[in-house]
Image (cartoon, rainbow over all chains, first blue to last red; front, top):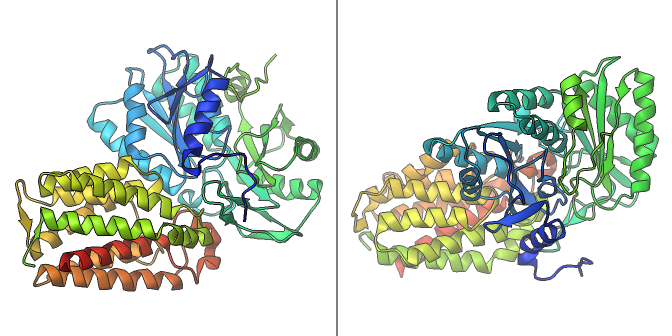
Length: 335
Length: 206
């Protein structure tokens, strides 16, 4: 089957997309050592640096969130594949500082292995760091152990909060504690109506019948098991919101931040209709929906669907979510 | 063949790289059933980089370390960590200045590789991963009376382990999320590992 994608040589996808992103936003981000995206204007040494790692093919995440108030560096692997440990260590060496580094790791086998090996080596070299593991996907079930939960787009609000805390000059211990507290109350569910193709080899990933959708599908098209006939935006939002609210034990009167992350082929129109449904559900539940993000944040090629991310907020994390960031793909929510 | 020399090791890695590269598309196809269809690319990257390092090596221990580091640096995803830590661990299990490995030295070097890998990468036989081929292969090397026997045992055990993965349900990586739907498919990581041990055996006999 011919792949209908505007690409060149498949083996150069990652290098070319990063080059494009860094040229488009050259005042904010720059490419360093091959596949490492860093800030164009480095953060002062006395502040904690935030690094994350992950595969490509999910743009704008993760590299599009490098910038003031968010990431200092994003270590990129290849399409849907984690960077290797050597690359992660390279980023940690580059950003080594007395203030320390917070490494944000999404729970996927490859990312965890590479970051574990890199952290072992970094420790030997005396690099000061802490790490936070994002594993907020609840498709494996509410009772599933953390190790069985994947890290999805919930990493982005977490990076926003940790990044703002670091920018404010908080210590590594404080930034890590703020990130962990926020992390303890994020949950994500994904839904897909179509699968996608691996852009390097054209193989289809997770095919769904024409009249089917699947709740719980991951960000590489891997199935989650909750298949059904296609439901309306309101019906889909209700199932997802209720499960997510339960997962983070959201209580009446609490504040919640919601991100509707389009995975590639679902239109802004659809995503906005879903957000509207969420706003109604939040009102019915008696929780305060502070502003949200409705956008393509972490995509899965041409997959039709979205991820819904619920984050419980306290006064501190609310302030950090609204804080300014100049990362190319983050829309600042503050006044 | 009494012992594995650097020259022999070069031939073994060269054939393994060739076989894996020839099977790149097949391995991607296997991976697409449960994963994201890129295992062929990742393992080819790792084993070809390892082979390049071995071909440039001046001694067994250093060559094996360089191979591990190259596999880790020139590949991505789990494969880079798995083969990187395995081969660097094998290097740790080879004596300084060693010119050749007898059956016992070969087996203990691979055992050291397995231990090093398991310190970073969790997994057991039955998880439907590379471990289903690799663990039995390295265990089957232990106690072999000759290098040939060690490699024969390893290749046979890896093959058997890789074929067994069809009966298993995935517990790791992206395939895990498919649950029972993953039964009936071969694990690409175990299959490529079996190809490598088979190539090692074939090249060692030439």
